[in-house]
Image (tube, rainbow, N blue to C red; front, side, top):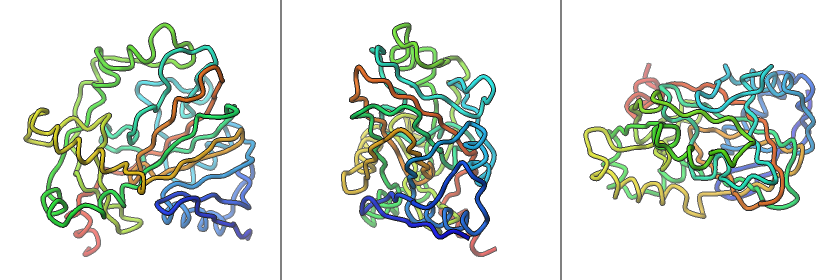
Length: 295
Protein backbone atom coordinates (compact mmCIF):
# COMPACT_ATOMS: atom_id res chain seq x y z
CA UNK A 1 0.00 0.00 0.00
CA UNK A 2 1.27 3.46 -0.87
CA UNK A 3 0.60 6.40 1.42
CA UNK A 4 -0.59 9.50 -0.38
CA UNK A 5 -0.01 13.09 0.68
CA UNK A 6 -3.01 15.44 0.73
CA UNK A 7 -2.32 19.19 0.79
CA UNK A 8 -5.26 21.63 0.99
CA UNK A 9 -4.97 24.60 -1.39
CA UNK A 10 -7.67 26.82 0.17
CA UNK A 11 -9.80 27.08 3.27
CA UNK A 12 -13.09 26.40 1.50
CA UNK A 13 -12.34 23.35 -0.65
CA UNK A 14 -9.66 21.76 -2.79
CA UNK A 15 -6.54 19.69 -2.13
CA UNK A 16 -3.58 18.48 -4.17
CA UNK A 17 -2.66 14.81 -3.92
CA UNK A 18 0.90 13.58 -4.22
CA UNK A 19 2.14 10.00 -4.39
CA UNK A 20 -0.34 8.65 -6.97
CA UNK A 21 0.47 7.66 -10.55
CA UNK A 22 -2.86 7.42 -12.39
CA UNK A 23 -1.27 5.62 -15.34
CA UNK A 24 -0.92 2.57 -13.08
CA UNK A 25 -3.62 0.37 -11.50
CA UNK A 26 -4.44 1.52 -7.97
CA UNK A 27 -4.92 -0.93 -5.12
CA UNK A 28 -7.96 -0.71 -2.87
CA UNK A 29 -6.03 0.79 0.04
CA UNK A 30 -4.79 3.65 -2.13
CA UNK A 31 -8.26 4.12 -3.61
CA UNK A 32 -9.70 4.34 -0.10
CA UNK A 33 -7.36 7.27 0.62
CA UNK A 34 -8.30 8.96 -2.65
CA UNK A 35 -12.01 8.52 -1.91
CA UNK A 36 -11.57 10.04 1.54
CA UNK A 37 -9.71 13.03 0.12
CA UNK A 38 -12.47 13.48 -2.47
CA UNK A 39 -15.18 13.39 0.20
CA UNK A 40 -13.27 15.69 2.57
CA UNK A 41 -12.14 18.33 0.05
CA UNK A 42 -14.84 18.21 -2.69
CA UNK A 43 -12.27 18.74 -5.45
CA UNK A 44 -8.89 17.01 -5.66
CA UNK A 45 -5.95 17.71 -7.95
CA UNK A 46 -3.07 15.64 -9.31
CA UNK A 47 0.08 17.01 -10.97
CA UNK A 48 2.57 15.59 -13.50
CA UNK A 49 0.32 12.84 -14.84
CA UNK A 50 0.60 11.22 -18.27
CA UNK A 51 -2.42 9.07 -19.07
CA UNK A 52 -4.09 7.61 -22.14
CA UNK A 53 -7.87 7.69 -22.65
CA UNK A 54 -7.95 4.05 -21.51
CA UNK A 55 -6.11 4.91 -18.28
CA UNK A 56 -8.34 7.93 -17.76
CA UNK A 57 -11.39 5.67 -17.99
CA UNK A 58 -9.79 3.03 -15.75
CA UNK A 59 -9.44 5.58 -12.94
CA UNK A 60 -12.96 6.89 -13.45
CA UNK A 61 -14.40 3.35 -13.36
CA UNK A 62 -13.57 3.17 -9.64
CA UNK A 63 -16.37 5.71 -9.07
CA UNK A 64 -19.19 4.53 -11.33
CA UNK A 65 -20.53 4.41 -14.87
CA UNK A 66 -19.68 7.00 -17.51
CA UNK A 67 -21.89 9.69 -18.97
CA UNK A 68 -21.83 10.51 -22.67
CA UNK A 69 -22.73 14.19 -22.98
CA UNK A 70 -25.97 14.74 -24.87
CA UNK A 71 -24.85 17.91 -26.64
CA UNK A 72 -21.02 17.77 -26.91
CA UNK A 73 -19.15 15.13 -28.91
CA UNK A 74 -16.67 12.68 -27.38
CA UNK A 75 -13.58 11.14 -28.93
CA UNK A 76 -14.37 8.93 -31.95
CA UNK A 77 -12.93 5.80 -30.32
CA UNK A 78 -13.92 6.73 -26.76
CA UNK A 79 -17.25 8.59 -26.70
CA UNK A 80 -17.09 8.71 -22.89
CA UNK A 81 -14.03 10.98 -23.14
CA UNK A 82 -15.05 14.50 -24.14
CA UNK A 83 -12.37 16.79 -25.56
CA UNK A 84 -12.62 20.35 -24.23
CA UNK A 85 -10.58 22.43 -26.65
CA UNK A 86 -10.05 26.05 -27.48
CA UNK A 87 -7.66 26.72 -30.37
CA UNK A 88 -5.35 29.73 -30.29
CA UNK A 89 -7.30 31.41 -33.10
CA UNK A 90 -10.79 30.74 -31.70
CA UNK A 91 -12.55 34.04 -31.15
CA UNK A 92 -15.69 32.72 -29.46
CA UNK A 93 -16.50 31.68 -25.91
CA UNK A 94 -14.90 28.86 -23.97
CA UNK A 95 -16.65 25.72 -22.81
CA UNK A 96 -17.67 26.03 -19.16
CA UNK A 97 -17.09 29.78 -18.97
CA UNK A 98 -19.87 30.46 -16.46
CA UNK A 99 -20.47 29.37 -12.87
CA UNK A 100 -22.42 26.10 -13.06
CA UNK A 101 -22.76 22.48 -12.04
CA UNK A 102 -22.65 20.00 -14.92
CA UNK A 103 -25.78 18.50 -16.52
CA UNK A 104 -28.17 19.25 -13.66
CA UNK A 105 -30.92 18.96 -16.30
CA UNK A 106 -30.43 15.15 -16.17
CA UNK A 107 -32.62 12.95 -13.96
CA UNK A 108 -29.34 11.73 -12.47
CA UNK A 109 -26.85 14.61 -12.71
CA UNK A 110 -23.14 13.84 -12.70
CA UNK A 111 -21.46 12.60 -9.54
CA UNK A 112 -18.30 14.30 -10.74
CA UNK A 113 -15.91 14.92 -13.60
CA UNK A 114 -12.23 14.07 -14.06
CA UNK A 115 -10.56 16.72 -16.24
CA UNK A 116 -7.06 16.10 -17.65
CA UNK A 117 -4.89 18.81 -19.20
CA UNK A 118 -3.13 17.67 -22.37
CA UNK A 119 -2.11 21.19 -23.42
CA UNK A 120 -2.30 24.00 -20.87
CA UNK A 121 -1.61 27.64 -21.79
CA UNK A 122 1.49 29.31 -20.41
CA UNK A 123 -0.76 31.55 -18.33
CA UNK A 124 -4.51 31.94 -17.83
CA UNK A 125 -7.18 29.29 -18.26
CA UNK A 126 -7.50 28.60 -14.53
CA UNK A 127 -10.62 26.92 -13.16
CA UNK A 128 -12.45 28.18 -10.08
CA UNK A 129 -14.50 25.95 -7.80
CA UNK A 130 -17.06 26.89 -5.14
CA UNK A 131 -18.25 24.76 -2.22
CA UNK A 132 -22.00 24.34 -2.18
CA UNK A 133 -21.74 22.87 1.31
CA UNK A 134 -20.55 26.28 2.49
CA UNK A 135 -23.14 27.99 0.29
CA UNK A 136 -25.84 26.19 2.28
CA UNK A 137 -24.19 26.39 5.69
CA UNK A 138 -23.71 30.17 5.52
CA UNK A 139 -27.38 30.90 4.77
CA UNK A 140 -29.51 32.30 7.59
CA UNK A 141 -31.67 29.89 9.58
CA UNK A 142 -34.77 31.54 8.13
CA UNK A 143 -33.57 31.06 4.55
CA UNK A 144 -32.63 27.43 5.21
CA UNK A 145 -36.10 26.79 6.65
CA UNK A 146 -37.82 28.34 3.64
CA UNK A 147 -35.72 26.44 1.10
CA UNK A 148 -35.81 23.07 2.84
CA UNK A 149 -38.90 21.67 1.12
CA UNK A 150 -38.57 23.56 -2.16
CA UNK A 151 -37.73 22.09 -5.54
CA UNK A 152 -36.56 23.77 -8.74
CA UNK A 153 -36.77 23.05 -12.44
CA UNK A 154 -33.57 22.51 -14.43
CA UNK A 155 -33.26 22.59 -18.21
CA UNK A 156 -30.61 22.74 -20.94
CA UNK A 157 -32.73 25.03 -23.11
CA UNK A 158 -30.90 28.28 -22.33
CA UNK A 159 -27.62 26.75 -23.48
CA UNK A 160 -28.39 23.94 -25.93
CA UNK A 161 -31.90 24.83 -27.10
CA UNK A 162 -32.51 25.99 -30.65
CA UNK A 163 -32.24 29.59 -29.44
CA UNK A 164 -29.67 28.84 -26.75
CA UNK A 165 -26.39 30.59 -26.09
CA UNK A 166 -24.32 27.80 -27.65
CA UNK A 167 -25.44 28.95 -31.10
CA UNK A 168 -23.60 32.22 -30.46
CA UNK A 169 -20.77 30.93 -28.25
CA UNK A 170 -19.99 27.99 -30.56
CA UNK A 171 -20.96 29.34 -33.95
CA UNK A 172 -19.02 28.98 -37.23
CA UNK A 173 -16.10 31.00 -35.85
CA UNK A 174 -15.31 28.28 -33.25
CA UNK A 175 -13.71 25.22 -34.81
CA UNK A 176 -12.46 23.46 -31.71
CA UNK A 177 -15.50 21.55 -30.40
CA UNK A 178 -18.53 19.82 -31.86
CA UNK A 179 -21.57 21.22 -30.01
CA UNK A 180 -25.13 20.21 -30.85
CA UNK A 181 -28.38 22.05 -30.13
CA UNK A 182 -31.96 20.86 -30.53
CA UNK A 183 -35.53 20.51 -29.37
CA UNK A 184 -34.60 17.81 -26.83
CA UNK A 185 -32.86 20.50 -24.78
CA UNK A 186 -36.25 22.03 -23.92
CA UNK A 187 -37.18 19.34 -21.36
CA UNK A 188 -37.28 20.24 -17.66
CA UNK A 189 -36.22 18.17 -14.65
CA UNK A 190 -37.23 18.77 -11.01
CA UNK A 191 -34.65 18.57 -8.21
CA UNK A 192 -34.53 19.63 -4.54
CA UNK A 193 -33.10 23.08 -3.86
CA UNK A 194 -31.25 21.73 -0.83
CA UNK A 195 -29.54 18.43 -1.60
CA UNK A 196 -28.39 15.74 0.83
CA UNK A 197 -25.10 13.99 0.00
CA UNK A 198 -25.11 10.45 1.45
CA UNK A 199 -21.32 9.95 1.63
CA UNK A 200 -20.73 13.05 3.73
CA UNK A 201 -24.10 13.29 5.46
CA UNK A 202 -24.03 17.03 4.69
CA UNK A 203 -26.44 19.36 2.91
CA UNK A 204 -25.61 21.60 0.00
CA UNK A 205 -27.26 24.23 -2.16
CA UNK A 206 -28.27 22.77 -5.53
CA UNK A 207 -29.15 25.59 -7.92
CA UNK A 208 -26.97 27.19 -10.59
CA UNK A 209 -27.41 30.11 -13.00
CA UNK A 210 -26.98 28.07 -16.20
CA UNK A 211 -29.49 25.25 -15.82
CA UNK A 212 -31.84 26.22 -12.96
CA UNK A 213 -34.82 27.86 -14.68
CA UNK A 214 -37.32 28.51 -11.88
CA UNK A 215 -38.69 27.18 -8.62
CA UNK A 216 -41.40 24.54 -8.94
CA UNK A 217 -44.83 26.18 -8.99
CA UNK A 218 -43.31 29.65 -9.55
CA UNK A 219 -42.93 31.61 -12.77
CA UNK A 220 -39.47 32.52 -14.05
CA UNK A 221 -40.16 36.18 -13.19
CA UNK A 222 -41.17 35.30 -9.63
CA UNK A 223 -38.14 33.02 -9.25
CA UNK A 224 -35.53 35.41 -10.57
CA UNK A 225 -34.90 37.60 -7.48
CA UNK A 226 -34.39 34.63 -5.14
CA UNK A 227 -32.41 32.62 -7.70
CA UNK A 228 -30.19 35.63 -8.37
CA UNK A 229 -29.49 35.96 -4.65
CA UNK A 230 -28.75 32.25 -4.20
CA UNK A 231 -26.52 32.03 -7.27
CA UNK A 232 -24.52 35.07 -6.14
CA UNK A 233 -24.28 33.77 -2.59
CA UNK A 234 -23.17 30.34 -3.85
CA UNK A 235 -19.94 31.69 -5.33
CA UNK A 236 -18.86 34.23 -2.73
CA UNK A 237 -15.04 34.46 -2.74
CA UNK A 238 -14.71 32.82 0.67
CA UNK A 239 -16.48 29.72 -0.71
CA UNK A 240 -14.00 29.23 -3.55
CA UNK A 241 -10.61 27.97 -4.62
CA UNK A 242 -8.69 28.57 -7.85
CA UNK A 243 -6.59 25.99 -9.69
CA UNK A 244 -3.77 26.90 -12.04
CA UNK A 245 -3.40 24.27 -14.74
CA UNK A 246 -0.18 22.79 -16.03
CA UNK A 247 0.13 20.21 -18.78
CA UNK A 248 -0.36 16.87 -17.03
CA UNK A 249 -2.62 18.26 -14.28
CA UNK A 250 -5.90 16.53 -13.35
CA UNK A 251 -8.89 17.90 -11.41
CA UNK A 252 -11.63 15.64 -10.05
CA UNK A 253 -14.57 17.50 -8.53
CA UNK A 254 -17.76 16.44 -6.79
CA UNK A 255 -20.36 17.93 -9.13
CA UNK A 256 -23.07 17.45 -6.51
CA UNK A 257 -21.41 19.76 -3.98
CA UNK A 258 -19.40 22.18 -6.11
CA UNK A 259 -19.86 24.66 -8.91
CA UNK A 260 -17.02 25.51 -11.27
CA UNK A 261 -16.02 28.24 -13.72
CA UNK A 262 -13.44 27.93 -16.51
CA UNK A 263 -11.80 31.33 -16.99
CA UNK A 264 -11.49 32.61 -20.56
CA UNK A 265 -8.36 34.74 -20.19
CA UNK A 266 -5.83 32.98 -22.44
CA UNK A 267 -6.65 34.47 -25.84
CA UNK A 268 -4.13 33.55 -28.52
CA UNK A 269 -3.09 30.38 -26.67
CA UNK A 270 -4.29 26.81 -27.13
CA UNK A 271 -5.93 24.79 -24.35
CA UNK A 272 -6.88 21.10 -24.68
CA UNK A 273 -8.43 18.98 -21.94
CA UNK A 274 -10.07 15.56 -21.80
CA UNK A 275 -13.08 15.13 -19.52
CA UNK A 276 -14.57 11.92 -18.16
CA UNK A 277 -17.86 12.32 -16.29
CA UNK A 278 -19.30 9.85 -13.76
CA UNK A 279 -23.06 9.26 -13.63
CA UNK A 280 -24.54 10.21 -10.26
CA UNK A 281 -27.71 9.38 -8.36
CA UNK A 282 -31.10 11.07 -8.36
CA UNK A 283 -30.62 14.05 -5.99
CA UNK A 284 -31.86 13.38 -2.47
CA UNK A 285 -33.80 15.97 -0.51
CA UNK A 286 -33.18 16.51 3.19
CA UNK A 287 -36.26 14.40 3.90
CA UNK A 288 -34.95 11.60 1.65
CA UNK A 289 -31.65 11.72 3.49
CA UNK A 290 -33.26 11.52 6.90
CA UNK A 291 -35.31 8.51 5.80
CA UNK A 292 -32.21 6.83 4.35
CA UNK A 293 -30.27 7.34 7.60
CA UNK A 294 -33.15 5.92 9.63
CA UNK A 295 -33.56 2.81 7.43
